[in-house]
Length: 117
Image 1 (cartoon, rainbow, N blue to C red):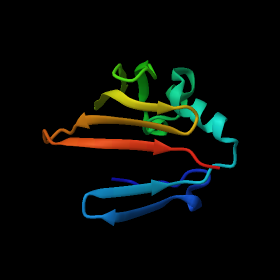
Image 2: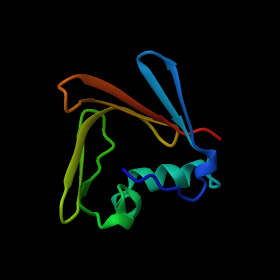
Image 3: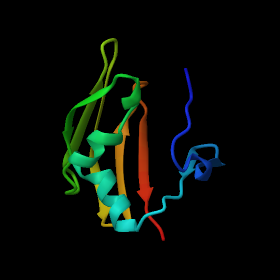
Image 4: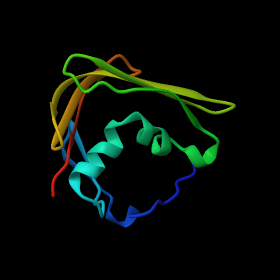
């Protein structure tokens, strides 16, 4: 797999605080409310989610921030298609969003995004 850098990629950090936790952090030069909007509004997510520079297009992007309601997204290229769907469990705009989902291996996982600053 080819790994490419992106704007501000020098601020990306990946750590493993425990054997069951992966923490990714990235600094954006923007106000928290704008970063939250870019990650929660379909018209913005369609512009950045996935490897869009490698022929992917976001074909489905339905985001509903109400707890318990599932949001869905799908990206596709000529040779591949990937989907994501998960019901949100917590939304504290613009500070926190968390959800649980079952991975391809059938194991549950919990995801939390926090915006600070």
